Structure formats: C-alpha cells, structure tokens
Length: 446
Ligand SMILES: [Zn+2]
Image 1: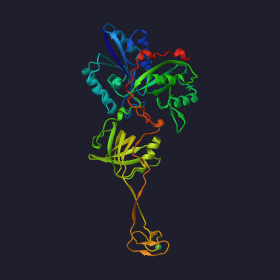
Image 2: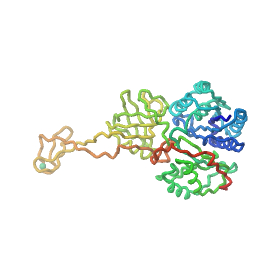
Image 3: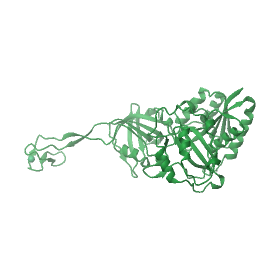
Image 4: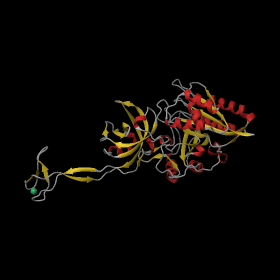
C-alpha cells in the first residue's frame, strides 16, 4: 500500500556555496528518476526572517513522495546521501539537517511550522515536537537545522496561500563566475508577465533581481502565481550559459505569512515577527542617514518603530506620520533600546489619519492685510497699515496630508522573500497544477 512520505531539509549551504533548494532539487529528481511518484511540488518554506543568525533568507525545503512501506529505507538512504553530498560547509557554521515523516502531517507539526514563521524556537523544542509527531530528525553537523527541516514538513503550503518559483541551476564549472543572462530579456519578460510574476526587477534602480550574486549554484529564480506562469516567463529569457537543472517550487514567498500574527506592544520579544496596531505617539524623528523612528502606543505600552532608508517609499511615508495617526506596523522586533522594544517596519498600513492643523495669523480688522506677530507671546500687528489688532488671535487652518490611508511597502529591491507584492491577485492559493506535468529537462535549454 502506498503512503505519503515527507522529507524536510535545512541549511546545506554557507557563504562558501551550496543552496538548500539545490539539495531538494537533486533529491526530488533522483527519487523521480527511480520511479517514485511525487505527491506535490517541492516546498520552499521561508521561516521567520528576523532571526539574526539566519543570514540568507531562512529557507527550508520539503519534498513529498508516495512510497511503499518496504521502500522507505531506500528513500531515507538516498535522502541522507544527497544531503551529505550537496552540503557546502563553512567554519562559520553549517547545520545541515533532515527530517522524515510518514503519512499525514499531524496538527502538532503544523502548529510548530506556524510558530517557526513568527518566533524564535529552540532545538530542544524541535526534539519534543518531532517525538510527538512521530517524525525522525537527523543533524549532520551542527544541530540548529533540525528546526527548519521539521518546520518545512509542517508548512501545509497546499492548503494555505502560496506562490511558485522556478529556479535554474548552474553547471559546476560556472560556479563563482558572473552569471550570464541577457538583462534586456529579463526586462521584457517582467513587463509581459507583470501581474503573473513578481520581484523580477526594481523599477526605481533598474536592478535585475532574479539572480543572486554569491557562490551558490542558483543562476536565477522567477517568482509568480502559478507554475504555468513561471515556466512561460522562464522560457522567454535569453540565457547565455548552460544550466544543470531546473525545478519549480511551491512556496510561501510573497504572502506575508510571517506578519500574520497580531501582537500587543507589551508582549514583543526580540527577533519575533508580527504586527502591532496602535497610535503614533509623537512626531517621527529623522536620523542621520535618513532612517525614521516613531513611537507607537497601544493599550499595553509603547514601542519605537524604525523604518530604514533603503525601504525607500516606505521610509518617505513614515516621515509624514503625525501624532494621533492610527497605523498597523508589521515587521521584526529588535532588541530593547532604552528599555523599549524597537520594531523594524517592513510594512505600514495607515488606518486613520489625524487632522493636520496649522495656526495662521488672521487678516487685519482695518485693511484686510496680513497680520504678523510682534514677538513671542506678543500681540499681532498689521504688516500693511500697522494697526495693532488687540483681540485677534491665530486661526487654525486644516492642512492637506500627503499620506494616504493605504498600505506602504518597500520597493522590490528592499523586500523580504516573504513580503507580499502589491500586485497580488486574490485566491492565488487555488492552484490545481500537478507536479508531474512540470518535469523540465535542462537539456532543452542548452
Ligand atoms: Zn491693516
């Protein structure tokens, strides 16, 4: 009897190279070529991006196959071998890990995965959850990777909002050299698939965003809303180097999955992700370098919100906030500063704008000219006829606000993997595509 078998993988890469998506692709294609039937696309699961020791996007992977009871041992052996073979370790710490789970994903594991998007988890916690979920976890070097490998299996991407990414990998001999892709073709593709793909290109800076720059084997990745779309977009590119393999992933990128948790200011702990709704408590301060800090309060307390200059339009919007504005600020919690948590803002929703009032000098009672103040706390005198207007006082005039009651996010170049683009269509999770219809041969592109 066939049963579903899940393999979670985390952290097979380092700054010296490798990529956990590459490990998952090699494993997927190896099992596929041995005749195993996949039950879904491999999952690329981004976890809490605000954990400082996870520098490269905090992504974990899961692959899913139907296997006979008697084949489980073979699948596990292949999994371990490929993880070992594709790991590129570095002295600064690599924690490759593999998790195995047979059958349905239990609730305890799904809940664990949700926590891994928002909180800081411990290895000890992972071991407890693995035991309760009947999952096996293996750490090959350091132990930290067991958290991600387990969380990847529990992500349930087939039943929550998700997107897709097609990734093409370089051949071994090209690793480390500049990536050769025709940039004009990326721009054309980006326009043609504007509402079907996202984050290909940063319009403000003109930067192409589909390619990384490091020693890893990723030539490029295109993100979009369906496997058909990312494949067609990929077919439109002009590549100027050979590729070793191609894979389409189901992923939680571009869904804001890490920002879904509403928190009270009093509950914020370092490195958590989430959203706080409150009132802007004072004028924003603009720091040297253009970063913006504003205090935000709710019934439970007060925090500082930091909006960094590279977030572009988001930082510019934050400068225009006024005391009394009601906003929802989402992002990651940094450590305490002067006893107060700071939230690094990745998304700002302006819910209600306070009135902006400026007090202007009134018109002269005698000639209608403009009055001016004779000094701090002094009476007003007409600029034109010189009459002192004893009883006149400044009049409040409502000013226009530049800010809109809308959602502000950074430009594509400054977004997190998980940040939802503004073009996101509705019901993107209702994808019925089957993975076996998308087996892509690298030979066809070389
Ligand atoms: Zn006058």
